[in-house]
Image 1: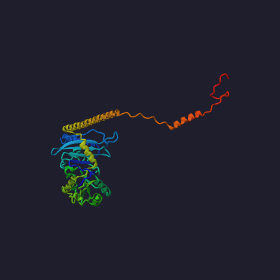
Image 2: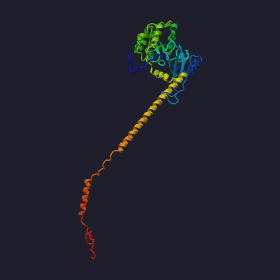
Image 3: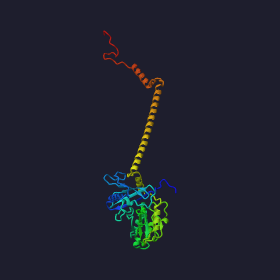
Image 4: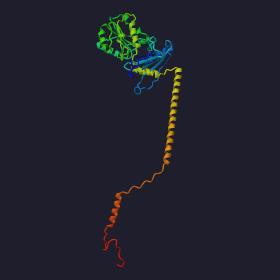
Length: 386
């Protein structure tokens, strides 16, 4: 299938990712205590809580930002795993968390769940709430009795881009053997990424009505894996629909296979997960000694390349300046050796100015002498002896 430049990135095969909500208080202390306990038991190689740093997502001054916890451990087969938990500030009585773990090899669902590295695997600690629906990740979630509430809940579940939602219809009300959560049958890598919805026998019609928008239906007494939003390109409703699920305490092998196959699809990576994955890879702080040395060598090489580029630029600028100075000197020499041209001619006399002078001479020649006070005319000198 051809890919377009705007195609959404998909989950890398080396990545494990989940999002949830911790209900209550002391989430940070719970994570610290769990990490320290696992480090003391040599389950975790090391962990780190980087200091707070201002980011683009940080609020105004004084507003707490997300808390980050990093941990490194080795999966079976001596496979290194690096994980980062982002714990958002508390709101509405809880804290949302985003957990991404990446291995140096393709992720094996049989490996321990990264969620149990940061959170205690204790049903009494309520860290396992789905952010889209508020339901538990490790238990059975019975659909509400109200039809409108059922439709609203399933539409929220169908739009969830993070966790996997499974709807199971009870053909008849099961006994205690049929009240075993699906999570207990799933491989460790899926136990904290799946939300199980249970529909009562009389709710089949309203459930399928709510799921029409997603193009899936729940068989009577069966189950279906919701495609999520956006749905994977390879998703086909028939491949992830189970006709019969026996709620008698036996292992639901067909449903487990459907959920596992869905998790293996090239699922679109949520936008928040894209940013979190980039932060995990580029802003990782929990380095080993070898990793620190390799990082320093990389920085030294980068600075050497930058210095070499600056030196080359300086030499090019110097050469260009010298050539410009030589060209200017040649220009000045050629300008000084050029023969002098004829002196500039006097500007031509104005015809109006010549006419004015002629009129002045004519006026002086025709001027009448003024009479003197003694009877003579002006300009005549008195005769002597008169």
